[in-house]
Amino acid sequence: MSQHHFNFSYELFADWNQLSESDQTLVHQALSAMEKAYAPYSNFKVGASVLLETGQVICGSNQENLAFPSGLCAERVALNYVGANFPGVTIDTLCVVARGELMPDEQLLSPCGGCRQVMLESENRQEPPIRVILVNQDQRTMIVHRVKDLLPFGFGK
Ligand code: THU
Image (cartoon, rainbow, N blue to C red):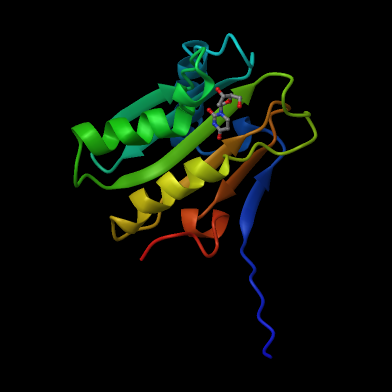
């Protein structure tokens, strides 16, 4: 038997207005994307903004469906759009924001497992890691330096 450890570092800010100007812009874009969420079943609205190496920003929001499994998370709406329309373009940062009672305020916002798997596949397709900015409902903000940190032992190469 051998013992192994996994640890990673992340940044925590009390409020997203402490972020750099460009990161704050990304948060603003995710917040306005969140307003376009279609979430009548969960009342949990999520917005995602993706900054590409070209400077373009692609946004997405969760889109639910009465046939529940047919809905899709904000992160996957945005990342799949990037894959479909900007193949081969490197992703710099993904920012996620959310509003709703589904998650307690004191719990840090964190992408679901399915989205992490999709995020990981995006990261594995490019050389640099993807930064992830997660903005909590109480404004606390976490910056993770690479998707791999959010999904150790993720399925993939
Ligand atoms: N949701 C996201 O958009 N992203 C996540 O990472 C977790 C959950 C959405 C899916 C569904 O529309 C609602 O939030 C409640 O689960």
